[in-house]
Amino acid sequence: MRNLKNFAFQRVLVLGLAKSGTAVAKLLSRNGIEVTANDLKASEHNDNVQQLRSLGIPVIVGEHPLELIETVDVIIKNPGIPYENILIEKAIEKDIPVLTEIELISYFGIEQLVAITGSNGKTTTTTLIYEMYTKAEKPVSLAGNIGHVASEVAAHMDNNQTMVAELSSFQLLGIDTFKPSIAVLLNIFEAHLDYHHTLEHYQNAKANIFKNQTSQDVLVYNYDDERVARIVENACSTLIPFSRKQKLLDGTYCNESAIYFKGDKIIDLNAIVLVGEHNIENILAAISVAKVEGISNQVIYEVLTTFTGVTHRLQFVKKIKGISFYNDSKATNILATQKALSAFEQPTILLAGGLDRGNEFDDLRTVMKNVKALVLFGETAPKLERVGKANGVKNIHLVDTMDEAVKESFRLSQEGDVVLLSPACASWDQYKTFEERGNMFMESVHKL
Image (cartoon, rainbow, N blue to C red):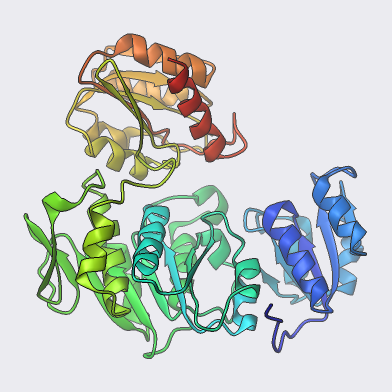
């Protein structure tokens, strides 16, 4: 097991337990660092609290005592905790660094790190890259926002392994020295503005993925995304662009029939089994990384002709009486749902709704031409109902539960239709995670 090297802090406050906070507290304690953990919402009987206390780590729950700031050198916070948190505000006032757990990767000496970010497509692209490494028999570990605590994975890696990590803007906002050998920036869409407050702050968080890179490192980026193309102008990295629209002799591109890397044909588009036109961008990004890493065209071909998608991202669930059910619960913003709807030409019953972050949904109108019915739930149901009516959708039904939504969508559909769960919203008004929401959808479908 690896140990931290040259870690500059001796007294650490881990703010927020959950999965990553608990893992970080254990890791730091194991490395001889003085750790205190604090979680406002956890109870005294929480399993994570009990685990840490059994290791001799002090844990304070139910409050944020300001005196904690007086005895620490750094805060490592759960990515989802906003910077308006009282302890974080006080720490910033006192020039105490506030980091997220991915910063710890820098102190494990991981030299081969592929990091992927973007508003949409992160999980699919990360999984594709991981599958290509695996098929090529290159030692690889999966980490980050995809469900594996990155610092914990790093602690158990061998020297010859590559880490492939999906990273969110929340995670990237809390870095200082973190630097991937290959960074991937997929796209930038107005998302998470309730957390970042402005698009500029959100873009800056995403740009952190390459801020410490040098010319020895690679930045794979979306040439077609104007926001991405603009911010990478400041990168010191070696740039590898990808495009669905332009022939790029220095990068990866496609025409109407095939995908190419620097002029070399990789695969015919009709051989790819992953559905959705938007997934071509994810595939182009993954191919860019694979070719930089010397992975053969044959390996890439084998992955792309067998890979059907990741759980909760345009995941085919089942066909019942000629009606196809798809789980796209990971579509937690408007752009993701736009892309999901664009993937189908069949009449579609859309299941949508969730946490109200204050935005409207008029941008969905351009992709609703095949939507024959809306089944809506959650806080945003009335807003989505307004958009549906404005777009001429006749069948609109508001329901309370996922089980009701699935039954209603089945009633409204007929052979050849698609039933698509693509909420365009976060899940937190009704579910703990988008995974829980997607699992409930699939369970209800199988009950049919």
